[in-house]
Length: 301
Image 1: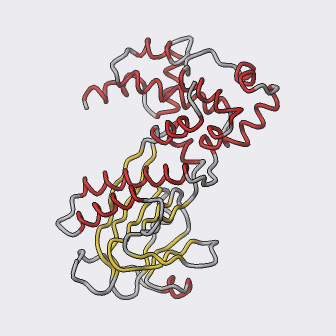
Image 2 (image 1 turned 30 degrees about the horizontal axis):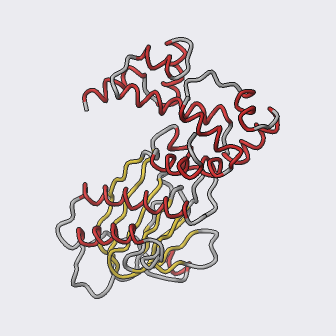
Image 3 (image 1 turned 120 degrees about the vertical axis):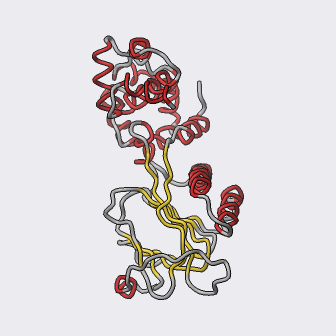
């Protein structure tokens, strides 16, 4: 049986995402910038100078200094700006970024990009996380994150490699999430489910045996609750139904088996489906691609 803390670690390690840069450079003078409306999660790393983060609904602007990081896990109404006052910030122009200059004494240097979370289990995990996370450079428990940020700063001081910056930011985000979890930050979704002793055992069994013929009754029995009480409490904690979570775990299991070269027929059986047709329909709907095509894509890689 997987322990509660190991369950949380497993969930974070299962978070599949791609980081992609769209800006590495410097703003000078009066300016504001935002990715609002693009429908994507984004990140902003301050590698030089300072600026202000404005998030709609927050009374105060947040001052960002060199070494601070911002992770926006939803498409929020926000802006970064040279101005602390929100009205003045909105009035500032959008500028083209200039190249980073290590000798500059004014302006702000930023590394900005997007996170794209994979469909299925990763999307469910992210839904339970905070909408936005600000990581100060002087975070007392963030030694690992600070070490990664120093590597990012060093990379920006030479001719920056996009690939290295994307991978370092990906790692930085995972360290930040683990720190949030292990310092007791209130998180929802599957992380909240894993933290509950009554549900951790069930979640561990679903992870270890996703292909079992699970029913609502058999899942409820693992928690000692009635069928109706189990369904209600599961939804309250996870923000998803037991069936949705089971589907996500089965699809993750199926993806791993397909990547390992198993046939679609073999994977369907091990993922808990009674027929190839039923598995194919479920996989295509959840992952957006037929299982055979998914397997061929990974064979080519």
